[in-house]
Length: 329
Image (tube, rainbow, N blue to C red; front, top):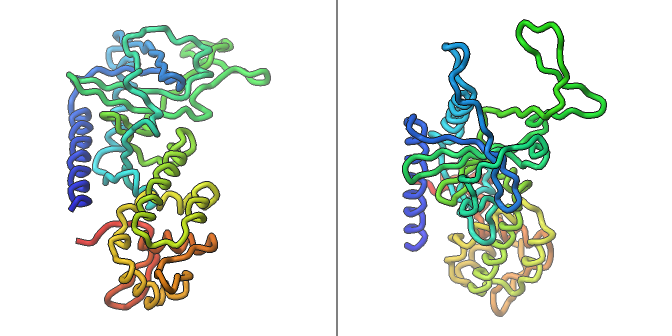
């Protein structure tokens, strides 16, 4: 029942995210600003985008263009998608994964974002910035969008290349010595109520240390497994967190919710000694019936066992390797 309640709470929170994003997309009554995110100490530097009346009445000023482009990007990437908790990102499905920032994982400390500070962006800031943050504000609600800088986001003059601006009706090209910023119509993640929402979990692992957070969670999961007294030894399981395959370490995040852990040690013993898939996979202590893990292969088989990696068709009795975990209704 506790797990079911947690699932309901997650679904309610997901619904709140969807409603806030939908409200953002539909409404034109929200503030919009763009910042360089410097990374360190959550420092922001506002980009003063031209928001004046364009020379041609048919045109739209730069700030409005960026606002429209980024809003459309949010709509495309974050509307009509399935949400899931970060615990299940091992599935690698086309979902939006949600992670609650805490003391162990807080790449964006929004409490430290100083939006009142209007320090002008300098050309040299472009080389130090990690990416762009887009701030959508309406009443007391704020949504942040992040765009990671790619190699082509900042075009700089280098020793052996030359940057020129092409002007209408000009025949002479002038060298541009300052960096040129490219803002793409793309949002890599959203930050809502201190939750990060993204489908790009590889970026979180590569750029923000998510894998270390995953390993910390895996250590906590092992403690729960130990409390079930089904292992004769957990040394290799603990060691696996630092030396094992990342794909298996990701799976460990959700093992504390494993249905297999609900079985008594006698029932589990019967299952793994009789089922063809698990028979002879482990060494079992004849007196305690506990599982002994004596090799890396056995550790991975144990993770697969708790994760219920393999499923069997009731119709054909064919066994399938299933990475995604979603209970059938």
